[in-house]
Image (cartoon, rainbow, N blue to C red):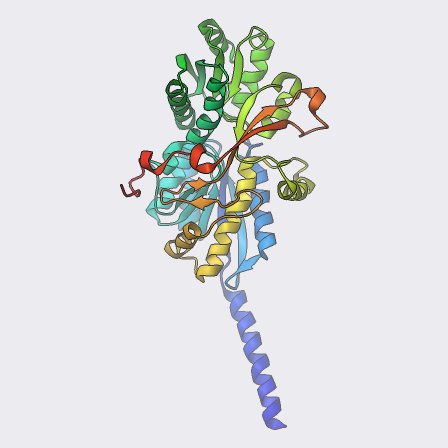
Length: 401
């Protein structure tokens, strides 16, 4: 009996010691660098933080005996602030992975900090192709969309339908410049012409002078190489000036369902746009979106859906690797296909680009919509290897040629 009792006490002691040891382990921290208060707040912002927290909760809240903690900070669309936040997260707060980093200039800045510290950074909100080209790194992942994919899907479809002359309204920073450059290349390669462009400051409220230049060009398409509040304002003001009624087509080269909701179907109807995700695509996207809406009262954007998917993919790799070591985790992330509501057979390439299907949508007429957020008609599904830049064209120094 003494032997049995001593065995029971020993087992209980071991279990208690193991539990105490797990509680003593520091939390695994992941940090979001987001636009919480400016023109990209609807696209990423608090919704991205919510998506990351949902991913952690669905994963079970802990990994390798460590509680998972989600941090978030507002970069105010300032590249230097983004870099400082990344530096503080990685150097002082013990963050192991950074997610989202909405906006390209801020992402490029934070990416350099993560690269110097050999930490994983996953981009969901920014679009610049540079993130998987010149600015690529061994632990950098560009997950949702990029300027090449947006240009390729939207520009190609437009030119093939006869909209073969373009004028660009371009946000004057890395993302806008890359989007104009990539779309121009698609337009000219497909037989179209670029008649000119004008650049506007980030977060512009008055587009009148820029739109008048675009109108005077007589281009069939006014390409909006901007995003968020800039895209919304440009489309609304183009309608007010009668530009669309005059026969010119306005094409947002990056637009999200939240933008269309802000613009309204009466003004946005007929717009062609490329997206990486839409809440109403299938049963899986609807199921996730329903849960997301219960918390936020809004459907998820592609960037926010991508945050959930990418955080989940990261945590699965940490668990499988048995460590948070970036080299071991990124190796598994690149070896493991991504199959969830966001992507089917998605794959992270050596340049960090996550390859997945893209979708071409047309915005519905008010009479076609069954209610708020029912905004898109699916026109085409473009396979990832056709939508995104090929490795042969990559400028990433990690790509062997």
